[in-house]
Length: 399
Ligand code: PMP
Ligand code: GLN
Image 1 (spheres, helix red, strand yellow):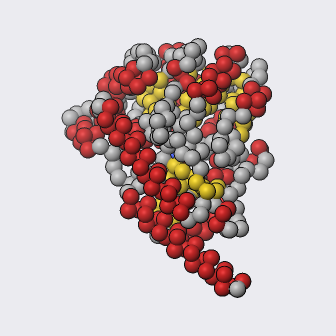
Image 2 (cartoon, rainbow, N blue to C red):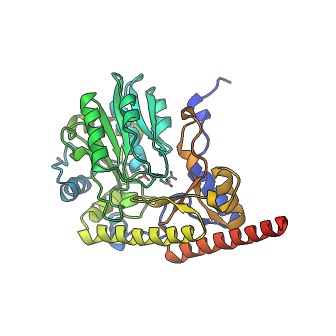
Image 3 (cartoon, rainbow, N blue to C red):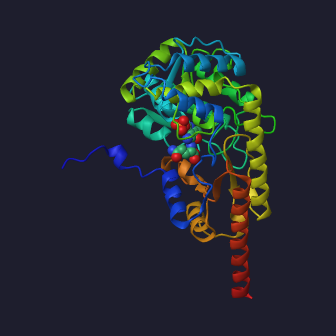
């Protein structure tokens, strides 16, 4: 038989699914795949339930129900001062995952270059490549993850069509600084390029860090497709409701992509997300401060075990350098080891790097802290018990 799609044949199952399956197999606490362990706000859930039984279950409009498009426009105005036309500048998608694909489809022709920043979220590269575009990867280095400006500038050239920027960033938990955003903005204007802005963690920032959409920078209003996710903003990751905000000509093309990918997104969920986006400021602040406390709790626990905990300015995640523990293997071995032996699961950071860029740093693991306090405490207790027993065994063996 003729071989099927080469690109898809060449990529494995996503690390999130692999590690979640391993966690289930070993009865591990799953701090790998990023999902909260409790549902989002009751009024949003109730709105979704009520919307199921009031007779609006046929195909909703292609770009999203009016209520949600209006709510997305209003949220853009409230949080960022952006003036957005809900009729022509918003497209609702089935999750940010579809929004990313639709946005890339809206921009790219085969042969176009796309600047991507490593470590990167796992859907970016396969989609860029499937569209026949050429990735230009720029690496951030731990532990600070600062933007390497010379390398970034060098990645731009005459064929650059777009950058794909994720801030707050998964898996580094970095929030790009205003100076970094301004540097990127200058490059985009200079090279007449666009930006696909993955801003799913826009409301999850800590320590006074505030999310600034690239779209709000001078000259960038018409160059950006800005992506949000109800999954993250309302702790409902299974809902898969995303939204793109973009200038009308780009939104139109993203809608054309969406009509060929999924066409629409479940109407009751859309209407409930509109209720969520209209919630008062206290909800959004409360979400961030609750997660900040969890970040602190897990970070302190992991640091107490001797790991070097990297800063986390946003997202669901905190990463550690586990080498002080004396574990000899790489990050994949470490994450498997703790899942199987300590029954706590994390994600190896090498999963967020492409082989084309050379060896990635291989002694970092990402832990999700969007869990009940008791679960975070139990995870730390399990790791402590395991590593204490292990070093005692090693001392006995060498002593
Ligand atoms: N982008 C990033 C950086 C993410 O971490 C996620 C997490 N799931 C997504 C996109 C996908 O969001 P959604 O679940 O809304 O498709
Ligand atoms: N965004 C989530 C993470 O980084 C996972 C999403 C998924 O499983 N596809 O953990």
